[in-house]
Length: 80
Image (cartoon, rainbow, N blue to C red; front, top):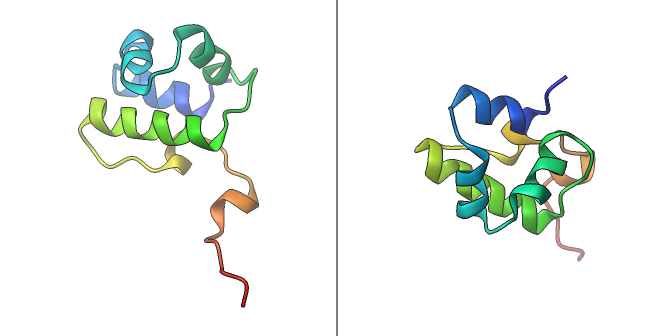
């Protein structure tokens, strides 16, 4: 079973080396994320989303690429 990120890359014909160059993360690090062996940090998710937007030349959301937990899906509300 492919991760959302892997499915996106395949469907948009984005090469892992191009994603690595655009995101600033190594191909090895991205491979672990693409195969679901490693959970990316928020910073890494942001870099991958930005890279995919640029490479696909279309709007991309983090939820298009990753299974986000409830915490990441909900907007932050300032404590009053």
